[in-house]
Every structure is written in structure tokens, then in C-alpha cells.
Length: 277
Ligand SMILES: O=C(O)c1cc(=O)[nH]c(=O)n1[C@@H]1O[C@H](COP(=O)(O)O)[C@@H](O)[C@H]1O
Image (tube, rainbow, N blue to C red; front, side, top):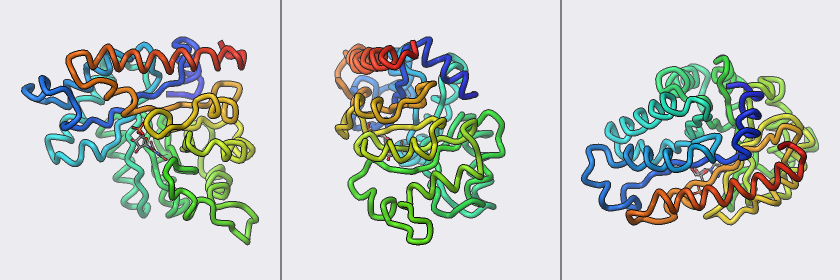
């Protein structure tokens, strides 16, 4: 999927919402547990309730890997379902991988070729040769961690590099510009740290940013848009628990839709304010 296709979808749906399918068996409605594949059933229902409001779905692999082969099977089925029934949405494998080139080659093939995802999250700290293998796939996206949403993000990301005069996350953004481009690379910037959007935008004015941290983690959508939106929106804002676990009874689909709709409506206002729709 190209950046232009992403922007077209944003304009059409008046949304830059990503629904996070961080599916936990202990949190899904009990009546689904009798199904052959409860995780897939849950995901399918959430997707059907939200696909007109979302431009992307993000599957965090931890929630699937924890169940071994059965979990991987649910993941494969969910990606296939999205690709078959909603081919316009961006499917993100949230794997946060990072390894030597020879291994990275296998991860890239696993997520882009075998699994068929459009994007994968990657930790940048092994450097250029660990990231380049992901960038070899046409139409696919590598999403590098820049500013993460967690409390301890500054332990490394804010370390001052005396050599370059930058903070470490700035070096990640600046250096990686030479590896890929705004056509195949995005950066993660957490909604919980809006004060760092300006620095990321200074170095990467045209890149799309994947923004987790709205919803359960308390980040502000307004602040994200104020500091991070560019002339083709340039934002994909994720909410996982805040949408998919809005209700855990028989009403879970309508409650999830209500939460997604609320975010979409706020996004539409922000897109209008910026003259993008
Ligand atoms: O790469 C990510 O998606 C990610 C990066 C980050 O800095 N913070 C972060 O929360 N995430 C992921 O985004 C999702 C956030 O989930 P909720 O807090 O439930 O909306 C989880 O899948 C996290 O693993």
C-alpha cells in the first residue's frame, strides 16, 4: 500500500484510526469461548463492527504467540480475513523485531510474505543492516520505534549523544532517513509524550507516524494532531483495549463501534480543521 493510498483512505473514511487487535481469551465475551477459534471469532466481529471507521488494524503478536500454534493460527486467519474482505485497510504486524541481517531477512519474509501483512514494527537499535532487509519489499512498510509510549521510554531514547548533539531518538529518525524513505518507513511516536512530536516532525516532516497510547494509556488525540499532523495527515492513531474491550457482554460489538465512532468523529473534526477533508 502506498502513502497516497493511505491518504485516500483517510479522506474517504474521514479517519486515521487503527484498531489494535490485542486479543486476550480472558477478556473476550464468555459465549465466544465455545467457538472453534474464539480469538478469530472475536477479531472477525470487531473488524465487522469497525472497518468503515478504521484505516488500519494492528495485531500485536504477543497476544497470539502466547497460545503457541493455535494462537498463530488465529493470527493467520485474521490477517487472511482482513486481506480478503477489507483489502483497503493497512494490516500491521506489531512484532517489534530487531536482529542481525541474516535473521532480519527471515522476519521480513515471515511478516510480509508468509503472513501477508503490510507493515511491521521494528526496533532500530541494531542499526542499518538489521533494518534494511525489511525495506526490500515493495509496497510494504517498516515502522521504527522512535518515542515509545511507556514510562521508561527515556532510559535510552532521550540519551544525549555528545557526538551528534542530538537525543538518541532524533538520531534514529535522522540516520534511518538514509536507509529508507517516507514511501516505505514510518516511526512510532507515543501519544503519551506529545512534547516530542515537534522534534520528530522537524526531522521527518513527510513520514507517516504510528501513534499508540490513546485510550487506556491516556494520550490526547487533540495534542497528537496539533503537534504531528502534516499535509496528508501523516498519522495513524492506534487504540486497542479502549475499543475492543469497551464491553465484554453480548453487546461487545456495538460498544466497540461506539468507541471507534467517537474517535473517528473527533478525527474528522481535526482533519477538517487542517483542511484535509
Ligand atoms: O508499536 C506499538 O504499537 C506500540 C509502541 C509503543 O510505544 N507503545 C504501545 O503501546 N505500542 C502498542 O500499542 C498497543 C497499545 O494498546 P492500548 O494501550 O490497549 O491501546 C499495544 O499493542 C502496544 O504494544
